[in-house]
Structure formats: C-alpha cells, structure tokens
Length: 104
Image 1 (cartoon, rainbow, N blue to C red):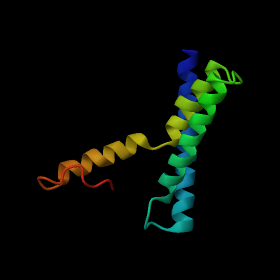
Image 2: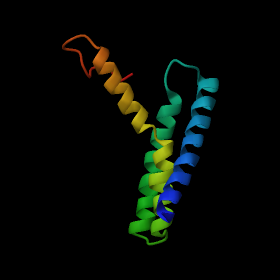
Image 3: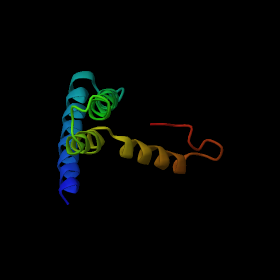
C-alpha cells in the first residue's frame, strides 16, 4: 500500500506540473502549436532516463524514490494517455483510408 500511495502522490504532483507548464506555454507562445506538450515530453523523457540511470546504474536512488519520480511524477507529467486518446479519437472520425493519419 505504501508504494501505491507514493505513485499516486507523484502522479498528482506531475499532473499539476503538466497543467502549469501547458498554461504558461499557452499564455507565452499562443495556441498555434502545443508547446507545453512538447516541453513536458522532452523534459519528462530526459528526467525518466536520468532517474533510471541514477537508480539502476549508480545506485544513488532507492526503489521507492524511483517509483515516486518515474511512475508517479513523470507519469503524471508526460501526457501520453491524453495523446493516445486524441489519436484514437481522431482515427474514429477520419474518413475511410485516412485512419491514424492525423496526430492532432
């Protein structure tokens, strides 16, 4: 139960960070391109790799810290679930022969 709570707390923190970054990017750069999504994907992917390296190779981080940061915080930060839903939803509305051809 303790690990589940770590992941849940990290996910809540990551989701809040994603919201703040997306809102800031929208205000600064406008709605023409999803800059917030790009930013959280790049930063989140880099940080997942860094945390995994520190936990598995350098043995600097423990298992609970790794779960909190990677599965929790970075899982909440990176909008993979939303993007997958967006792609699936667009493919259902696409004309025949065009399913899956649009990403946004």
